[in-house]
Amino acid sequence: MAQKNILVIGSSNTDMTVKTKALPRPGETVLGGVFTMGAGGKGANQAVAARRLGGDVKFICKVGRDIFGDNSLAHYEKEGLDTSGVLRSDLPSGVALISVDEKAENCIVVASGANNDLLEADIDASAEAIRGCGILLLQLETPVPSVLKAAKLAHEAGATVVLNPAPACPLPEELFSYIDLFIPNETELSTFSGLPVCDEESAAKAAAAMRAKGVGKLIVTMGSKGSLICDGGEPVFVPARKVKAVDTTAAGDTFCGALCVALAEGKALREAAEFATAASALTVQKMGAQDSIPFRKDINL
Ligand code: RIB
Image (tube, rainbow, N blue to C red; front, side):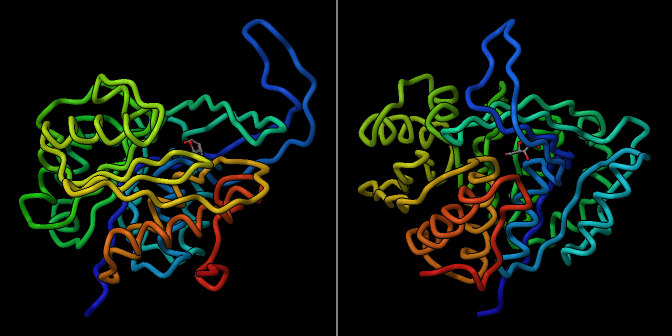
């Protein structure tokens, strides 16, 4: 079977990360450790993950007419992404300020800039690419009306529409009916379903509520525990690998990108989740977002 092509529409950021013993509380200053700057943004991380893991990937995003935008574009080209859909904005390129503590947990503040300028008109201008993709992968770091428009176009053209609803924000109910695969973490699932999510049982209940809203299937990512596949049948739990995490930034993005590659290759959801689990286990063992995303040759299955 021919591999389906993957279209990622989403954010592009430059990540500025400081490692610290403990994350600061409100009003507190803490002295951190090493500072690093690298490529990030949920959209870009997912596109790069899908490409490095063997996907045929086009990336649509908006960056500023500044040095960060120039660097990002050059980087995406070097990664082998189809960048013909990368657009420029008069707003500054997106930047994320990230703190990572000694337990590998992070705190992220994003200055969206040009990401917020990816408008419905830009989606209209990319309609041909959207209608022609096999899998459309979306997140929520770009304006919701644009996400809705892209999902609708792809759904009507028969593509598989995948939404990683991060960061959680209010969504129109209409969007859910265009989503074939919804990949929230536990907090996001709780926000969208309105139900508490703390374990497999509660996640399965909340997933059923999302399916009632129109979402096709779900994979709930549950951090170091694993992920739960909810497709309407008996939920299937895929355990995470036991590894020493140093930075969880982009672990979820790697999971989403990897999952889409496996689906593009025709793998079933469970096999795809196992592939994604192996990929994200590698991401958490290195610092940074795209600096930590593995290549296909690194995956040990
Ligand atoms: O998911 C991780 C990403 O979230 C970071 O790369 C940062 O840019 C924010 O978008």
